[in-house]
Figure 1 (cartoon, rainbow, N blue to C red):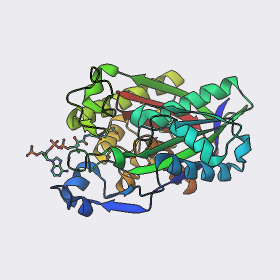
Figure 2: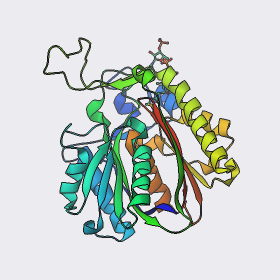
Figure 3: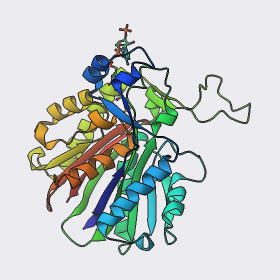
Figure 4: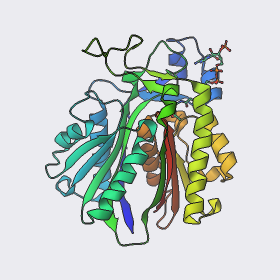
Length: 324
Ligand code: ACO
């Protein structure tokens, strides 16, 4: 039927950075951050916790749950925008760390929607190559891309990784369908420069370095509207009522975006998995981390209908339905 998730895993850095700690870096307060975003604390990477290292640990946990060995992995897809190198890909470093000698590996770049886009690529790959097993990983060290002097953005993000093992099964479960979108014309509402160019002709005069820049209010507006549209479009296409959804795992951007989305969709609050208070916005890692927590907490039973959705820089956004 489609790509079935055999196992999930996640990895969070040890170090915690609370809202109180942030108050020592920029002019802000726990009350301001929590009331605007729902975030209380986030994890920050230390030495030995690069994106590929967090992703590798998450992948090992997912493979252990799936009860498969690394030799069985045929493909590794990593969604990230904060790898420690531009080349090779983060996925190649994960492959090396795992010793996944039978796998080829590549990255997907779709900002906070990266995991959803990578999951869709993995599902499509498995519908063609049906006897393969793949790892799909979302991993970020956004602390390395955050301007720690900018209170508009530094309060939002955190580090972490999540992973799933996928296999095609001729059963009534797995990825049911996806509804994915991009709109590059809106790039300048949420973006991050590359490293300064070596070619002076191509260097951008206003390049402040690799920091996230954002028009917060615009991002908020588009995030709610776009995810709502993607979800409703998907439900209509698949002829599924919102009440049939057993669990919704949205990208953990911030609580106000999620509350607005949930009320517009008319889905019951108790069906929505939220952990943004603990980890902040971990971009491409947020959905697989939440998925792993929900799975390990027993929130997903065989046959459940799972809805995942995301929104991020690009803009990129979308929704997917999975039968557990
Ligand atoms: N602490 C205290 N004050 C602050 C802070 C802060 N950390 N940041 C901004 N302020 C101040 C502003 O300077 C402004 O002051 P002023 O009125 O004197 O000018 C005031 O607070 C209000 O600022 P706004 O930007 O209007 O605050 P807003 O209510 O819009 O909240 C926020 C800002 C939280 C960023 C909101 O716009 C938002 O949630 N946007 C979505 C952004 C997002 O989630 N991005 C993640 C990437 S995309 C994704 O994952 C979906």
